[in-house]
Length: 636
Image (cartoon, rainbow, N blue to C red; front, side, top):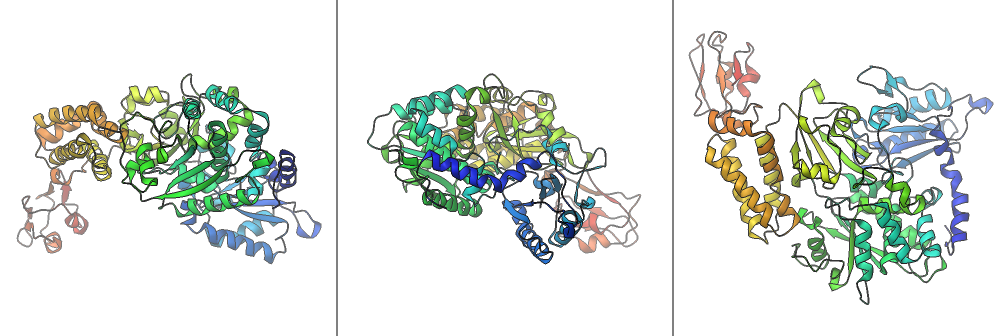
């Protein structure tokens, strides 16, 4: 691709590249695909194959290869495109193949399905019914995403190009107004005007804290220094979270463009992306996108013929959760131990190498080009009074529709879990949802109708966080859930401050004691008091929010804690030490199958006589239940 030296060159490139994606945009209206080859009835169409990490792990690359082979066999390789895209979001039903322009949405596709899609659908005009999504409520097949509950209430802004464009072709990004926002800023706006627009949009940081993005840019712009930096925080470490990874895999140029816009606004010429090394596909696509942007003249010196220059480098993290905190992240990039420091000074004043540094996360940056192109008022009209725009969530856990969603701020948990998420797996009863990752809290049925925004979630005892959302059902023990998150926090603590290093370890030990049936009521009060002290005294956001799972479960599931302590009972049957395997003497026939398969010889009894389990020896492995053919053994 030739160098783009001016705004006019960018417009010409967009017009030339527009044909690449025009049929896909038209396909959102559902045009017909299929016809007789001999009569020339097959028009140009595209097969979009999900190339996100999840679908790639399920052979989506092989599916794309098989589709190309089937098309070549029929002489359609020049008529029908096969495009590998980023994540479609509907991970529960992947691998996904989408046919455009008729907008057909195929789920759980396998490599051996490729020929049938080409022969039956592309050539014959008959959709492959067995691969269509089946609505669990109506038991009918739904052919396109527009009519799926999973997508119906979504509004994709940060994810606008994921599942639609080939992330490895800069031409496709440019065809969808890519780099138009950068061109607008460089040629028609002053840096202060860019900052003012971002401020008026109401965009807040999507990394967890929710700090106003425009205000952060303004503070950094006013800091005086010979050099400034733009840092993209791509160190996504929450269990079950994959929002930022999917954006980088599916639309890397949106992050690059936004970082360049930020650089222009604050007076920075250097950008750094801090990304964890466990994201190889995201790294690969970012590296390709940066190289393409440089080759086209959209990174480097005199971008679009102006005096502004900006370039980007990647820095790799080793997977430390604490390095999601901006000062710890900066220290890691400097080659130091990833530990946070007390603020002020904030990075906007003294950050990377002591220079003013603006740090935003991936999702925050992904919103910037759209805000510039469509205006602050357009973005501010979405969401709530204090929480504007949309939020991306990784919906996981005991939910029917696991996947990546983007919804307007203000939507309720009920809408997400029971409409977009399709309800609880196996018809089980909803029990809780953890929002905000390890730093968030567990919300219950009484919270299902609160609007999802920064203030409402905080008031309910949780937080927005970066966007993890894990759903739990009646089979989950909330004491064990709190213990799981504390175990994660203890492992990930940098150890710099005493409340986090020592306090969280003590919290974990108390929880462990309770799940083993050795807790007391005094332990419950000690748990609450210690959690509050850690929350009030820890150095950084990780330590200050780490007690949230404990405090929220204590507040919402106090009766479960009391049962563990006073009755040595775990109603969910998850705390192994509190489980009792018992043999019903009225049902046991004395076949000895259980005794012969017990690994610790905990079962006693003569042949043809009822057996008994020695509770002091039993390790609750379940081997006896598995081998008993008479259903004589149960868990109490």
